[in-house]
Amino acid sequence: MALQGPVHAGSQNEIIFGSYTEAQRNALSGVSAGTVIYNTTDSQLNYYDGAWKIIAPGPNGSSGAPFETVAQAQSAGVTEGLYYFKNGNGTSQQLYYDNSDGGWILVASNNASSSTIPGGQTRHNLAYTLHRNGTNGHLGTPSPNNDYIIGNWYSNFAFNRCRMIGFGINSTNGTYTWTSRGNYIDVQWNTTSRNTITSYSGNVTWNTNYSNGNRPNNANYFSIDGIWSDYNNGGFNANPNQTTVGAVGTAGSSGDPSSGCYMGHGNAEGSFEGWYGSGHGQQDSQGYTTWLR
Image 1 (cartoon, helix red, strand yellow):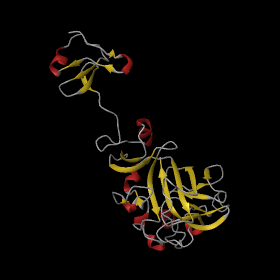
Image 2 (cartoon, helix red, strand yellow; image 1 turned 180 degrees about the horizontal axis):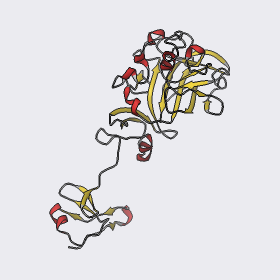
Image 3 (cartoon, rainbow, N blue to C red; image 1 turned 45 degrees about the vertical axis):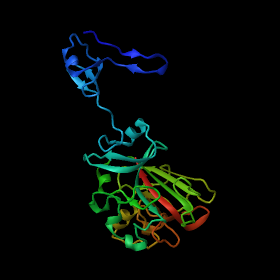
Image 4 (cartoon, helix red, strand yellow; image 1 turned 120 degrees about the horizontal axis):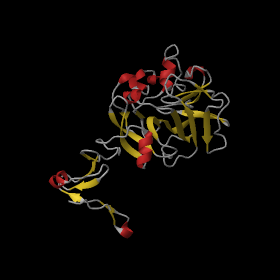
């Protein structure tokens, strides 16, 4: 039996492969390596490399085909939203993915419209670190418009860059959202660990859309996990406004928010965060989000 196709179907830009039942496929002779057919028995494309094999679909972010890296999500061309990712330990978890700027996964969000994460020094607890003190599963809702912490899944996720986007500065009444941010800052740096503290000079980009929102001079050192950096430097001692869930920018080289907190420090924090700008003192914000890739 001669192989059919592939046949180009003119203006529809389709490729039609030869169709065979599994029995017909197995009866083929003289098959060349690299041959592709459509198996009508199991409705799968098959290829031949000395034996017939199924062409398995690539990862698509579903529970059955999770992404393993942000780069895979980028290659798949998926839009912003919820997708499953598998970490280096083989554990899958549904995460919030932002497809902009090379792609990111959300690891923490502290939003003024949610109170799942408590305020002030009530956060002096390892349960509010990114890995939630080893707790599997997330806290809150995976969305930049809600309170959220990713949990222990991230402990086995290889990353090399952090991004903090804070939005809706000096507003906590729900006027601003992730898609309607008002005045915001976008701060990024390369890092591979919660224990790595990154100095600003030549290593950190601080972008903003409002004139007073540039980096204040004392925001010199950056950590991906403010709660951990507080605990890891002599125990919890940050004041209620310094205590920060997710990324933090500090005066001290330890990354400890108690050394002076400038990114993550609100004015009269409830269950939310804030920051200093080059042209204003500490102010609360609607949203404060931390992302990795």
